[in-house]
Length: 398
Ligand SMILES: Cc1ncc(COP(=O)(O)O)c(C=O)c1O
Image 1 (tube, rainbow, N blue to C red):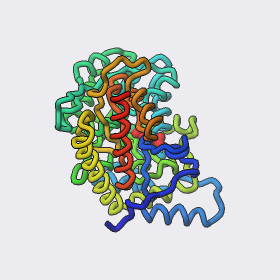
Image 2 (cartoon, rainbow, N blue to C red):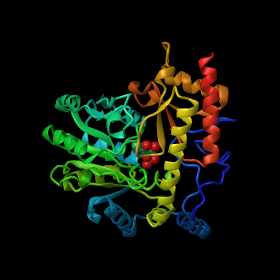
Image 3 (cartoon, rainbow, N blue to C red):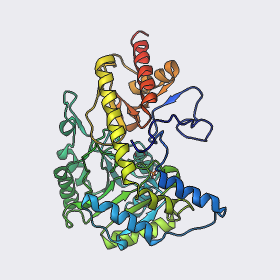
Image 4 (tube, protein in one colour):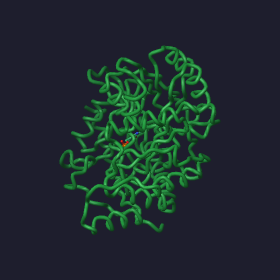
C-alpha cells in the first residue's frame, strides 16, 4: 500500500463530532473516516492555511472542471452550465425542498434511509411519505436483500401532494448500488406522476472494488430530465468539514429556480479551503482505489467475525458505503418501549463503550438493526468487534 490506512489517529479533543461526544467510548457511528486525507488534499489545505489570510473566496471554473472530469468515469457527461456549487448535500436538499414544494406537500423517501432526510422534510413543514424498502432476511445476495416496492411507490406518487422524491443512490444505510433497471422504473413512475427525483449520490465513489454505481442522470435524457443530482467529494475523501458539494441538473427551468434558492438560503458561498481541496480530491484517484480495497477487506473481516463469533447478528449483503447494516432481529425477543435498536445501542454504549447507530433512527422498519461505520484502521475495527461480542453476550444474559 502506498498510502497510510493503518495509523491510529488520536481524534480526541479535536472538537470531533464522532470522537468528542462522550468520554471512553469507541465511536463507530457518524459517517466520517478515521483516516488521514489524501496527501494532495492535505497539501492544498496547508498551502491555504500558511498564506495567513482567510477572507472571502469565490467559486471558480476549475472546480466544475474537476466534477465534469470525475463523472466521465460513470458515463455522465456534465456541462459547466448544468452545475451549481453548494456548501453541502443537505444544504442543497434543503434548498431543493423549499424551491420545489410548498408547506404541507409530501416528500417521498425510501426507508430505512439517512435520518437527516426526515429532519429536513419535517423542519421545513413538509410531510414525510415513506416507500418502505422490502427486506428479505434470508437473502445472501445484495440484489435481493433490499428491493423497491414499486406498487407502493406508484400509489404514493399518485397523491398530487407528492412533489418530490429523495433517492439515496447508493443507499445509506443498506449499502446498495441501485441498478439501472430499478432507476429506470423510478424515473418512469416519477415522470408519469410529475414528481421531481432528487438523487443524493454522496456515497457514489465508495463502492466495492471493480463495481461502479449508476448515476440517475446517466439514464436516457428524457427519462431523467426532471431530476436533480447532489454530488460531493466529502464522503469519498473524508472532507465533510470543508463543506463542498455540487448540484447537477440538465433541466434549465429547475436549474434557474434552484440557483436562486441557493442564493436566498446563502448556501452558495465557499469557504477558503473548499475549492482547492475539492480540486485536489478529484486528483486523488489512486488514494481512493486503495481506500476501497481497505474498506472491502474490513467488510470481509466483519462478515467473518460475525459468522464465527456472533452468529445471532447477520451482515446484510451490501456493495457500497462504509456503513454496514447489521440485522440483530435474532436477539430481539421482547417488546421494547423506545425501540429495540435504541435499547441495544444504549446498552452497548453503557456496558462496553461501543457506539453504533440504532437502526430505528433510519425509520421504524430499521428497528431490528444497528449501523456500523467500518472506515477505520483494522486494529480499531477488531477492537470494536470484540467489544460488540462481549456486549451482545452481556445483553443476552441481562
Ligand atoms: C446520504 C447522505 N446524504 C448527505 C449526507 C451529508 O451531506 P453533507 O455533509 O454534504 O450535508 C450524508 C452524511 O452522512 C449522507 O449519508
